[in-house]
Length: 339
Image (cartoon, rainbow, N blue to C red):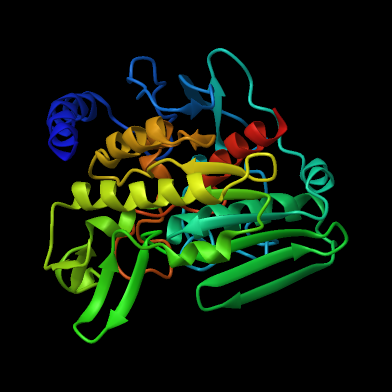
């Protein structure tokens, strides 16, 4: 199975590099080019808002950075004096339909008394803060409760009993401190105990799988009781994601919980081959998991990274400004939840 996966990846590498060479994302002050011919991977259940193009919309952004209390400084580009603002004015327009306009009141009414959890790394944080701001802009005087502690955060809209939660776990599978050191356990997912009872789950993982040497938060990889100093990261990702898929199959009741996988957020310098792995795993999962296919529409938004305009030290080309691109990711989520 793994040999077959590697052969698929080798074929995909040449196709993806060709696509990346031909494309050129929108620069500052000009609209990104439309997307006509990028191939769509074949995986499970997918939301059909592709292909499409980024179009100028004078009504954007969907909220004001200065009035949303939930934006962390690492995403708050305007607070850190980003001089251009054209990146705020683009709306994703599918060729075959229209995305519904976001309505925060309708969202809260639909999910009255329910809990929505984002599970993953700092890109899940990016999307969680975006959705919190989008709702807040509709009800700026609503009573809210904010809790932030290690690994878990929550924004609750008290008058509706709606909870937006974030569970930070960069690999989905477990990372444990043991006598030998920090161990990434590809076949263990005890974290999943915290995800039970949610009405909506939105999962994400990839960014941290690429970290190496001093920037990786583990010393060993464990699988089947054996420790490895390292392994091919795409293979490790496949194994870890397969463990997550088994958790979904065993623990999710589709009549009570909707499950989404947040597609791979592209880095400014490379096309994410991890999308091949995601599609492979999702095509085999037994329970309904909906792919928020954000990868290729996000590739045209290289203008939307914080770069130097955030609290982040150095050049941040992994995360996204807020307001900004993650608002579109949440529009895809909104469309799926209301369809």
